[in-house]
Image 1: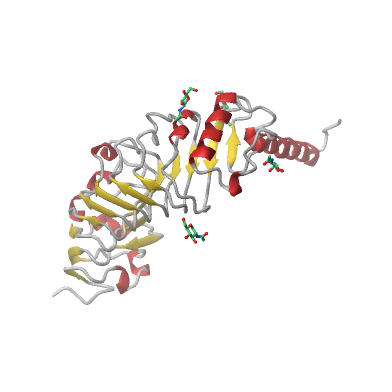
Image 2: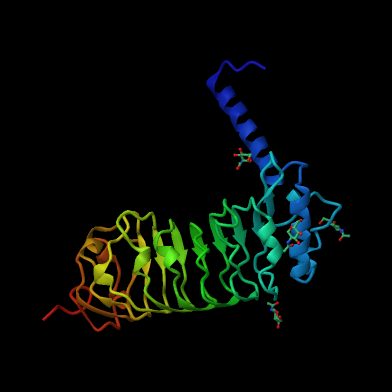
Length: 282
Ligand SMILES: *[C@@H]1O[C@H](CO)[C@@H](O)[C@H](O)[C@H]1NC(C)=O
Ligand SMILES: *[C@@H]1O[C@H](CO)[C@@H](O)[C@H](O)[C@H]1NC(C)=O
Ligand SMILES: *[C@@H]1O[C@H](CO)[C@@H](O)[C@H](O)[C@H]1NC(C)=O
Ligand SMILES: *[C@@H]1O[C@H](CO)[C@@H](O)[C@H](O)[C@H]1NC(C)=O
């Protein structure tokens, strides 16, 4: 094949990319044997639901619904069992899928506590964990330091583990639980955190004492017990979402182009916040 004209080589490159993407998605014919056994144990622990009837031996496990593999090793890298209304504890057999990068078990009826293996200590490549919309109880384990972490809409209680202070997070969503205590350890000028959702919990900490992470452009901490003032640095940030309503905050709202995008309801229900979009400070 001649590749003299530039658009030919571009087309060729695109074709190669499309084909390799398809191979990567299907995981080829390879399927790690012990990962397959672990997946069948996961299926069984979830009560062998009809929705997972495709997880069977006539099909290579890398082609099962919700499963992706590394095409070279055949190891399972993604596990998605999403919105199937499955009622069970988080299956222990997931701990044997040690190449997992992404676990999404959102919108089921999973109960019990979050197992300690769902974190980079037991699953070193895990950077994405969604357990939102379940019925999980107990405290968040210290091992759950996953870069993109969503635990929104469960029944979690207790304070954040101290390990969260030293962990690297990109996106943390803990809204709609019954979490308490300090969450200020998630902040820090050097942190990578860009989105933090803590809405509708019982967190209590001094917002005036935190340094906003440089990349942070989403901060939703409404309906907690957060006190102190809004950091002055908030004025200069390009906020995509910002809500501090219904806390115990006080003092002037830092005035900036992006804080001005949000109406009074994003600041309402505090102890003594003032200035635009709320009434002037007296
Ligand atoms: C196995 O999975 C395939 C693909 O989803 C499906 O067509 C087949 O009926 C399944 N076999 C059994 C025994 O469930
Ligand atoms: C697949 O696994 C190999 C060997 O561990 C690794 O070098 C490679 O980066 C992995 N591929 C992807 C897409 O993660
Ligand atoms: C989910 O499962 C519960 C029982 O576990 C059942 O009562 C409910 O109707 C189910 N919801 C849906 C949307 O299937
Ligand atoms: C994990 O794999 C080991 C070895 O194959 C096995 O003995 C063990 O039962 C598995 N654990 C779970 C929870 O399935």
